[in-house]
Length: 175
Image (cartoon, rainbow, N blue to C red; front, side, top):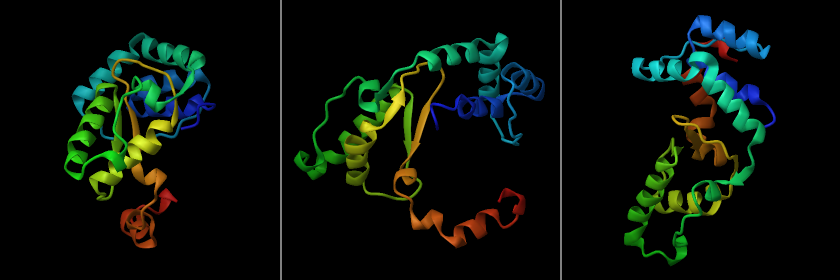
């Protein structure tokens, strides 16, 4: 997501809103959004609608975005201590990875691995690379930040022609 383009963030909110709220958001921000059919579980939908009631969520988000400092993810997480992978005994990698993932979850930060990768690679990636990613210092109750490993290391499993044919052959309008 591009920090200089708040429409990227608003688009995520837009996808969670009902049609009347979408029209209100479009008028309020004078922007054009792409309409997408996305299933949102009822309890999540109610949570989003509660945040958006009176536009409190959007106003708070805009306020924090306008004043947000950009900081490394490590700082956002409170500068956690961890053992470098090369100093970590092999039998301690998995528990340490779980500890780091729990710490991230406690701060509403998540990482998805679309392909199977070894625990030591996941730990290395998070502690050596992801922790250095610069993010906006925005904290709003119920808002999560997600990262995808394959955005940093594209996998042929997901980015070959067969994948696109299988996934999107029935949706020619997608391209």
